[in-house]
Image (cartoon, rainbow, N blue to C red; front, side):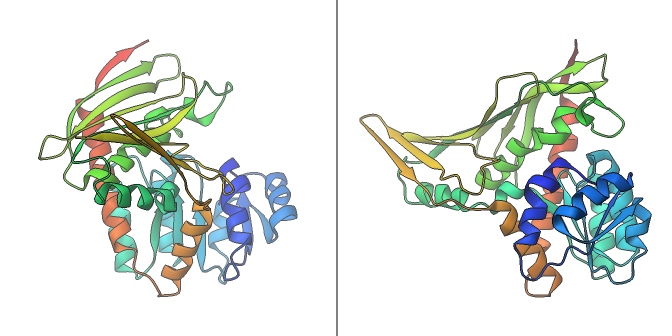
Length: 317
């Protein structure tokens, strides 16, 4: 549902590579865009999103629409009896996200948010290095996801649908902090740069903390040089991973471990995080996997995002 760039480049190729998925239909606001996509990936081209939900033989819907359109179309897809894989963020608020999760559960349908980096094996490799004590006791986490300015008209500059940099990709560092520091994070502070012309947040920094006082310092923005990394600092060293959130499927991540008198680099296996999330979704739809734990992570993420936005010191520029 929606001919987004992420669908063209990553999700539809992953679906095409899964033997249990048939791309049966692709809907767009324009028939021309739908035809372009179905010419490559197959299926029936449809004009209008409603037309997709009216098809009786569709089991599941993938929704890569702009973030602030998710709540409406996830609701309508669930009410039509379809399982849903939706791009992050699931919605723009905790209340809407909770409502959708409860609706899916009440109807026995799968609803999965696509924070795809969580499905890449490199992060479990990092967890293992930490658990093995390679850098001592954890003392802090930092993560950065920044990109250069986008072309004029990009949806991220549209407050009514895209919602700005924080909602679109500022959540990646927040979700990574959850992954490594656990579910009990509190918001210690945040600073946002708000663009008055576009009416959206362009960049910012966030400080989170665990109950034990371990901080997570997070940076995001769309007015920077490109960075996509995280670092875990500990009592005897630190480790880092580049291209942490959006590695191509053929990319072999490099895990760097540094101590005072020692440095190692581990080349990790290439992995296709989109293929992995599609397989997880397929298994859940088939009844072979329960995604309740992922949904609880989605709810915690939505709560953190709400709280960060509430406390953020906003500077208009």
